[in-house]
Structure formats: C-alpha cells, structure tokens
Image 1: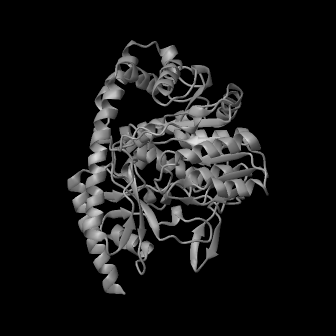
Image 2 (image 1 turned 180 degrees about the vertical axis):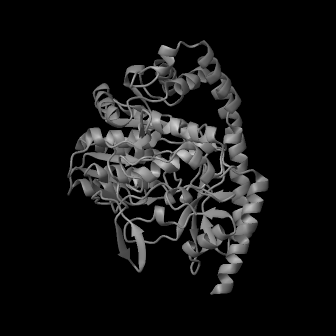
Length: 494
C-alpha cells in the first residue's frame, strides 16, 4: 500500500471497458478533487510514481494529466509539477438521512413532489400486453432511413441543422392539410396546422395556452390519464362524465352544464381511451351543439383514426365545426412507431400562435429532418401503401387475439371485441386480482398492466387494456400460454 499517496490506492481500472484507461484515471482523479480528497493547491505525484502505483505506462499517466490540464482541474507550475487548481470549489459528501431504518442520499434541493404525477413506465419484459402500440417491424423504416440519409447528403447544413419553423415543417403541414381535408372531412390550411412531438406535447401546450387556474375541464370518467395530468397541472378543475357503449354520455354532460361553467371538453372520439368504444353519431351532434350553445371548446384526440376495421368510418367531430370550437389532434407515433414522436394539431391560428410561444420554453422546434422525411414519404405514396398493409395485418391480429381470449380465458375475464384500434379493453372477473396477476406475469417475463393507470379516483375497476397490434400470432400464443400459467398460479395461491 502506498503511504504518501493513499488516495491512489482507491483508483480502479477496468481494461475491459470501452473507455480508455487514461480517461478512467483522469475521471477518478477529478472525482477525488471534487470530493475534496485531493485538496485545492495540493501537488500531484509525478508521472513515474503514479505509473508505478497504478501499474500502467508513464505515457498513459501523461495522457491522463493532459486531460486534467485541458479541463482545468490542475495547473502546471514550471519546474515544480502539477497542482490542483486552487479555484476549484470544495464539494463535500452528500447529506444523509435516516428513513425506515435505511440510509438514503438526499440532495440539497428543496422539492415539493407532485403527488398526481408518475414517470412513464417502460416494459422490460420480452413479451407485453401493452396499452396498444404499432409494430415497428411493419413500419417503413428502410424507406424512412433512406429518405433521412438522402436529406443529410443533399441538404445544406444551414437549412438542415439550423433553427427551423417552430410551427413545423412547411411541406409536412401542406401535405397533412390536404390529407385531413380529403380523407377526414376537415377544412384546414397549412397555417392552422402545428406539428408537435406526439400528442402528449400537443395536449400539454394546448392546456398551457388555454386553461387558467380554476377553469372547468370535462373528461370521461374513464379517460387518458396523461391528458388529465396536463389539465390538472395547468390548474383545471376536472369534471368526469360516464362513458357507456355509445361513448361519452352527452345527456350527463348537459346536466352538468346546468350547474357548472366549463372551458374545455377532452374526448378520444374514434376509439375512446381506454374502453375503445366509438362515440355514436347522434352524440357527436349533441356534443357539438352543447359546445356551440354553452361556449366551451372540444379537444378531440383522434390518436388512431387510421385503424378502423369494420368499414364504417366515422368522421371526426372537427369535420362539422363551422365555428372554430374544435381543436383536433393526431399522432404519427400511433401510426409508424412510438419513438418517432411526431404529431399534429389543427386549431385556429391565434391558438397556434400561443402554442408556439409556450413551445419555445421547453423545446424551440421539432425534428424538421424527420418531419421532412415523413412529408416526402407521404408525397411519394409510401405512407398510404404502408397504412393499407398495416391495417389489414392489424385487423387479422385483432381477430386472432380476440379468439384466443374467448377460447382460453372466458372463465376469468370479459371483453367486447373492438371495431378498431390496437388494444382490447378487458375486465377481470372476481375473485381475480389484476395487480397480483400482473405481478406473476412479470415474474414470468410477460408485461400485463396492473390496471392502476386506468382507475378513476377512488375506484378499482380490475380492468386494463391489452395491446395486440405489436405481436405476431406466434408471439400472442406464447404470451397467452404464460398468462394461462399465471392464472393457474393465482388460483393455486387462493
């Protein structure tokens, strides 16, 4: 053990790591300086001594100290050697506190954690009954990659990598406007389209731009929880309306409006989240008339319009809007793959102008290279070909999955086969405990929601969405075999 420089004995070197040895040494020494183990103004041992103690070549030590010099951790004094920079602040060990008999590190930052928010969950299981997402293996990834690469090669660096239009790529807005007008019955222009990073950002920006503390916002009793988070974070008072087999109960909404003034109503009209039901045509008309008479606006989230399988397309509520009362949003993340984070908003220009202001606080602009790539794939017909192909495959997967649920799990659960979308809303029968079933599935490398994300306040539904679109028939069979084992284990423990 080295007596004169004991701190060197604690430096560990892993030659199997990708990081070069000299960088490992430099990082370890800088950490010791930050912690105050090696004090400001203290002289470092010479390269020969350090090389001998650490059992490395002197050139490696020279590279490490050069790194420290470059970063300002040490200074060189002629004919004297290297010294720790005296201007470095001394960082003491983190504070510690006792909690439940265990030591926990806490920061010096005073926080007031938001009890209503949870971080997004990512399944680490090999198989998953998720919330309902597309299968990236079907997506036009090669075409998207080639288009992205083509833009990088032919586009000018200033136009590609500089600041861009915060409202979104102009070509994509132009093509999206044409698509929405021709296929969804809307009356849009590129000027009243905003390209967001998925529907979650769109909802958040709309909430920030339109809701003041105390404003009333109506959602379904069962609703998209992330949207509710945005509304509550903006200070809204949430009013929850029942949802039945025809969608949001507009008669119950009308009764509420006799007592309360509201600012906005949020609805997933095409396939209600989470129950997957479609809002009936007569309720669409009733809802719009209520908005017109009572002076609130509708936020219509049409996150998977393209995936309706029964050849009975229902046009958006936004298609009947002649008074600027409907803000309409959608997402390519539910069409291409979840990680692409590209969505759109159709709204009056004055609202889009406010959204742009709020965007610059957290984002400044979207990824306009991806946006241009998607636009070019729309222009050459690739996206339409992909949608036709994927819709056919997802319909077959939906039918196969529902058949598996009926034939193998009817003793434990109930469901209605959805007309579209990428998930089935499943209610588990008593005495099945969904949280316990989910725990057993996870132990067997299968993700199943415990249902908590779908529960309204103070109610436990014992229900969840089970996504099917991302799985092949073979993968569904494997997942259902694990689910059968989990049910058997659950019954055996009761």
